[in-house]
Every structure is written in C-alpha cells, then in structure tokens.
Length: 66
Image 1 (cartoon, one colour):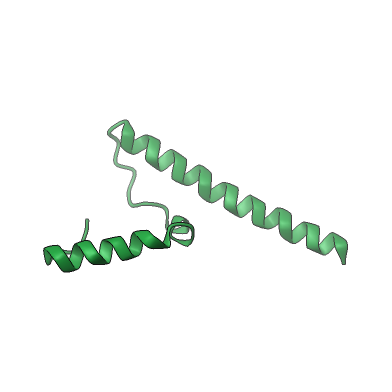
Image 2 (tube, one colour):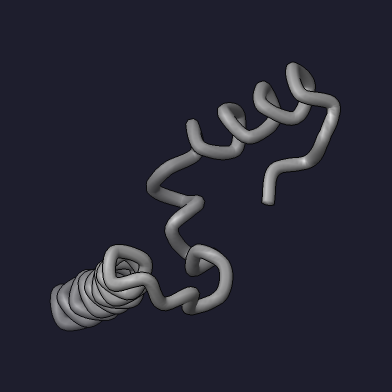
C-alpha cells in the first residue's frame, strides 16, 4: 500500500512539474516576442483567479479577451 501511495505522489509531482515547465517556456517565449499559442491549459488549475479576471474584463469591455 505504501508503494502505491509513493507512486501516486511521484506521478502527481511529475504532472505538476510538466505543467510548470510548459508555462515557464510559454512565458519566456512571450518575453522574447514569440507567440507560442495560448497559455497551457493545465495552468488554469493553479491560477483559477485568471478566469474570473478574464470574465470581468469581458463584462467591462463588452469584448471577449484575446
């Protein structure tokens, strides 16, 4: 049972690390002026407030955020 728990924890760590690496590469690309597509979708799980901020911007401007 302990091995299963450790395995699941390592898998979770791997997923979180992969999302962090993809987001870091995306941000660096933006800083260098390269458009690398939209923000990686896994980031929304860590930054749920960004969805609310986009909704607020949409409501105030009348246009969906880019």
